[in-house]
Length: 529
Image (cartoon, rainbow, N blue to C red):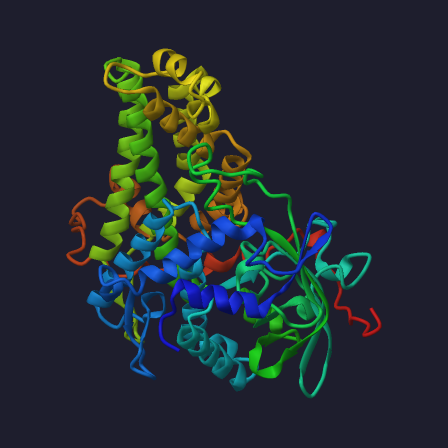
């Protein structure tokens, strides 16, 4: 099947019908439930975009196996031009939702492309697992599927590893092997948009502790696999949304779920890591290929959000006539400076791209990783704060669409709720509604928390960046300043800055690092659970 339309995606989802629960009730048809109407429509729009003549040359490429057009998300870039095309594709998809859908199809498409490129790691335990990784990538590409993933064990007793929990199957682990495949039991979080996806990829994230090999399992299965159920959190979207009062939360709510695996069969052809002894090492040694492929869509999403917030802040300030004040200009200038640094990193990583030994082109340097760390831990929150400061109390006297439509109220609203001369009340209200939707609502708080934690603990990630970063050149500058390199030439900056950094040996030292007291003795799981 070539690149799909939105209607084909919805038809597939309607046929699939995963086991989803919301507010204590089974959702019989996710395509008909009002909770999912907005996000399903937004995802369908992305599928339709790739067939639109205005976008299809950027958003699709000929399949290597069928020749049919498939999503550029899956393109393995063997030239710099391929990398440019992928960048344009990811940025376009992020711009469709202003960066507020972090787990739209393009992200997981890039993720499984990373699985394919990392197939040799999976083959260490068994050659068929490397084959499985490549075959699954081709299957998802050729069927244009929408995936979610489950990475993290539930927050039960986080002072203990998975094997030390009071129930050995609180966390997802392997119960037993059969001729047909693995039987897995337990739970995983957080399946972003899981109810409206078609497949789920499951893997441990953040490292696997000593003794936790049975929990070091990686696989992908359809969302309607027997024994798999999703329990949704409470929605952060308004119960009766409209595009004026809730311009983004009515469209881009990304539902999160906990996934319960009740003795689920995973066919052998869908297994990449099997939970046998040594699986921990396979998990803890990897992830580079996935990270290389997902860095670009993550950066595109964040850049789209930064562009959106800068535009919103400037229009908000202009609407009430405060752009002439020095302290307002300073705050807007601060936002724009973040944006331009972000743009330089985003496009500069492409300008310094280079081919790996396998011929695959990747973005140069560590800039995209640094951009991710800074935006997720500081810059996004600061942009939200500035918009809140600019709006002040203006958030709290923004009448609703129904008020504007009331002929008795409309004259008063037009008179007293307008902005500066030239900004009518409806325009001012619309801007403040949009600003509140992304800074003050439950939807906004969920996005803020997501941005901070969607790649794991930001403290641990930033510490890992320090451990992995090459330090010799930086130390050399200090040695020269101390006069210890007299007579030696000052090193020239590289003519080709895209040459990869030399990673330090301890680059993976945070992968699977746990306090020594929590490292369990090896333990076998009981099949009776």
